[in-house]
Length: 584
Image 1: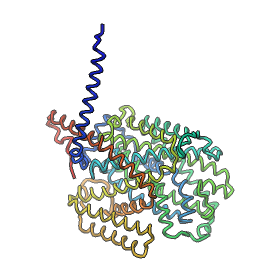
Image 2 (image 1 turned 135 degrees about the vertical axis):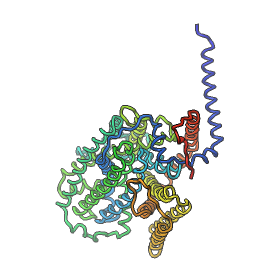
Image 3 (image 1 turned 30 degrees about the horizontal axis):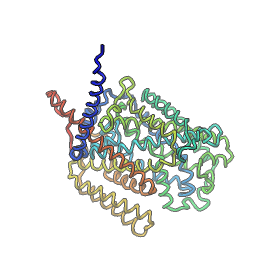
């Protein structure tokens, strides 16, 4: 016969456990200032990122990718919906036929940022991308802050782009009203009231594909990317064949809105290049990272830049710029020249590009979350790698469900500028980190010199951007431009740079490429609307609160436990503790 006191004893144990947890958490909160001081600037060495931290995932990711897989992933990640959404409106309202020049300028900016990513990815070939690069350079909080913004950018943009898939799929089958495929709910707020089950189905299908195997997902992306490039070639060849060169100069010349219009257009079309950073998150699954990563990242950016410029040029030679439609430009222009059937082809090609872009983006977002989980900044179960598939299964499923949930409700315009500001911030931080790592961590120069240079560089970039925005071009633009060149040249002359003895690839002509990347990212950020900065401020507050209430305590306790285990084992062959933390 069971003891009558057993249920009450179990309840007592539960209450005691809950009380103990609550008491321990309050004790942790009371130590928050000390733990913030201990952890915010704490960094790991690249060797620790590659070894001790990676072991927290259990099984290793399987190295199956080669350089051609990376090029396909990079192209697939970038050749998404951006060029179809932005080109027509920019040509009509900002640049005229010179929109292809805007793509060249934006491509140069993307190439500079990709150079920074490439050097980091070769020297620190882990799946964490910008999160890992910033954590080993500027410390835990900056890495966490960037990682949180990257994840937000991925989830929101993937959800919004998945909804755009429905639009183009409708056009493929001849249905002009894409909302006919959505379920409208009258009780929900405008912008969130059209439920898109097609987008949800696409996200969940890709999530299951990514859970199975990275190599098979890469092969699927390769096939889709090949067809997508063929589709781009069709638009380029058809446009040039049916077009006329006089449409580039009539009416108003090749640049009717002037240089300012071309630069403003570059800020808008720049976001068509977002996606190459996903390649750097594949570092743990590449057979020869030091060779394949530079080819994959830089090669994909150059190929996409060429395709975008030719696409924009073909659009502008088909009709005069003032006749280009603002929405669905490529599809509508083909109708204007009498090729109605090509509108359906454009819809099919754009749908295929969106699937490829989503596949790569969802591949990258899971790797980011996996590495953030290894750092214990989020629950550790998100860091686990499935031994049989070699993929971060938990992170993939979790983010897939989050993306599908948002795709069900949220429309593209609501999140577009929020995505842009987060992306530019991360690219800006990576360029700063590359200069700091090269001149302070590697070359052993005093940090104050490099930090002063980075501050002055950002300050002059802001001054130049404000002058451009306020049209104070008589003195502001040349003044801040010359100051930027002068301080960069002075820094290069005064602060020596020492290359690592065994490094296989590094950014040439430093610090000029990284400094120009910083300048352009600041400049492009200032073109965004005030609402984007307000939304970003709210998001920044939320993720900072999460770090203070959870992240810093989780990482502190994880490192404390690992240090205790190392001290208990006293293994003579282990010369370096897992808590060999450097503090800037």
